[in-house]
Image (tube, rainbow, N blue to C red; front, side, top):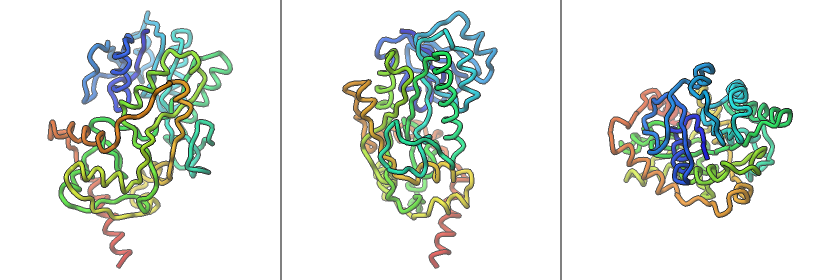
Length: 331
């Protein structure tokens, strides 16, 4: 089976490409070749700018794929380009959407694929949902063979999930330095952190399954943690204790308007995903990487090269400002 991964070296796609190769698939990667991570051994890389439709068409000319997995489309306009590029050239198009498309606030924390959709807080989620809707319309009108996958918070080596994002070392460094950190809300909202290797085994299980065409799925760990637990597990992996200060998501959004949507439109709510559907389509799948083990692997990736430990001064100042305001309010 020949599969094209648009992306293939990112947080989720790298593990998915490696899993596909392990299952004997012929894997092509289309990306710009700028990732900090090497592509998995055995993958065939095609370099180009996905944003340039003409260049993409030339790069893929003459190639037909049994499946196309799209990891870097974020809007309906992105998906419209893919429909133009791949209609009639693939038997399955897998679109990476997001679990943030589910309605916020949720009517219940227990989420199935049929739960209500719509996120009034976060443009990212609205754009992903618009892309889903365009794919459904193309399927209904012309039979475009789309499968929609909605990851929740998925991490891999080089990612450190915190209130303040996952892609840098800022919060980890504060913990190492013995400085206080901020956790949104009262720290008790429930969350799932899925390791990319676990996600990949379910995702690749959908590739080539004709019954998965026209369906939507999420696939998450069932290790449910509070945000306080997440930060304490991180601190334990660093050999420290977390000095947690709680600040409301609304207060964080006032200080950092650009961070507000991902809190008020996602992390502020308890979200517990029912994985019954993916288990029906990928029998035997389950998550095997608990967060305490996954985060140690991620931290080891940073330790292998200290230059990877990016501390963002603006995030550091943001946390200090929140702490200052919280202390002033308490006084």
